[in-house]
Length: 279
Ligand SMILES: [Zn+2]
Image 1 (tube, rainbow, N blue to C red):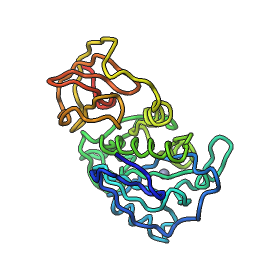
Image 2: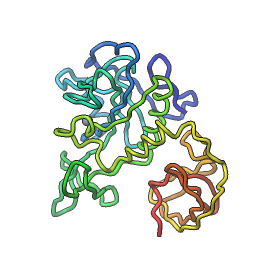
Image 3: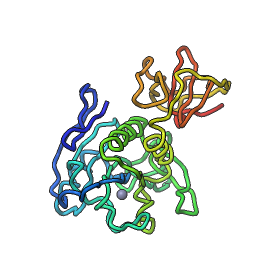
């Protein structure tokens, strides 16, 4: 579970890996009533540690509040009441310079990949295994291309962080860097489930959802994540009902609700939709 104390992330259960490394690349406190927005980014870097290190370098002239690694580990670079430098020239709903209004979350992800004879390659010349390549068209582009997949751990922890930020700061907008700087930026891109994050973090949290399905479907599906958490209720804050379901597990979906599916295998419970493929 994630909480926020003194504008820093804390995990009272000490199960998450959260470290704090202060960046000098900041502009002092937000004005009263702010931040009210979260901006999601990918790093386009080779590791969370190297990206966090760069964002502490004065030469970078850039920073963010958080860097989220592929295993869900979190590096916080500045307290949430301090402005960081992640948005650059940007505008959204009549406001410009979104650093004044927003918390920046950088996710360790290579972003756009280049197709080569050997396969899809990152901007730092690393081949990405096909299972981690998402072929998709960005909403601002005309053609499909390859993107590095985000891990299930990243998507889940970013949602948990956003829920905590919404709770503490009254965040009312969650946007991508590509929403606020569309002429320059493509992050977090089509491999990241922005719509589901928005729905769940901003609009789904007070939804009164049943613990048990009340309307039966019967769809066969396969688990696509390496390890898919299965929970007692359709929320990331809900308890786990067993060990995660391994990739390739066959399940029956009996209900869907707000980005979640109630599935039955040897065990039953709620899992995140995006990691199921109907067959
Ligand atoms: Zn960005």
